[in-house]
Length: 425
Image 1 (cartoon, rainbow, N blue to C red):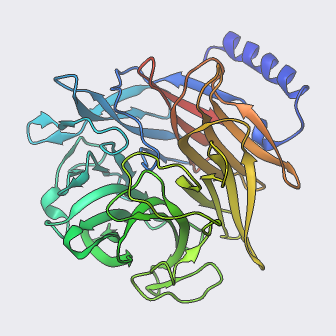
Image 2: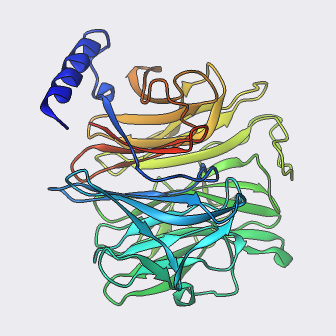
């Protein structure tokens, strides 16, 4: 950034801060448009399309759908922003051509993670499909198709969420369909970065006549993994229920509820740690469209400095037409639920980070001149929100807390087919 422009932004930020309560949540979000064309199919609520790396120079990797050869198809790329702010566009390769798939809104979107050796891993465009998995053969290189390396080649995979563990290993949480058995299960996989191999840890969530919808994975300082997912009527529904949590210790192989109660695999609706219980009148309905009524739709999690889970999710209360944005934290008395925002309709896009002193809840409103917001707790049950992208019609987002202590933003402007990189200090 040139000195003159930065000086002007600095004056604007100082002026803004005089009008707002003091809070680390009010850091100015600096946005940069990724200089590559984006496809209209680049939108989802469950995905993990963003990864970051570096404590000196800070790198960001934005996996996205680019326009394909025809209007109903997309190519898969990684927009890479290096520590100097320079961009490069890395193709995800299927043999000698860029990976191309049929559009499927809310389903065929990419998730990415960088392993401890610097290789990219991309899971792309799977909605009840066999593996579509891509990995770099060289550090930072263009990912190549390595679907044959995945266990369970017969599996039908949906909603792959992949995250990097503190030791450089990867963990993948996805839904695997075994429709004749009357269930769609949540399955956990592990990439051993030392041996460069994938293995299946196991089916971690399964209940007859129910389908698992993966939401997120997060690691604490001890290397333990926190897992978040929803349940729907088998085989599928746009409205989900009983938002659930598990904790996994790779060191011991033990799964537990938040209070430490051991959970045998697979977790069921009886043994999983239910964050958002069913409300009176809330029922499971199989429906391709939203059937109305109370229920969950999209959720993300992080951990605080003590390793306790903090969850952001959308829940439609009984009698409401809109999904409220809510926060769930765990304390001595169990799960504590708070409403962050419920004044107007929101989209299926939420995220959450921990700054070291407070949680930031990110969400997107259905309409308005400003749509992407971050909210912080203003005390008690009060929350104060700040616009992230004034004047930009953002419809989807993802956020990662970088090793440098900055919230890196992935903001999707569908009407104008633009992808934004942002920094919220």
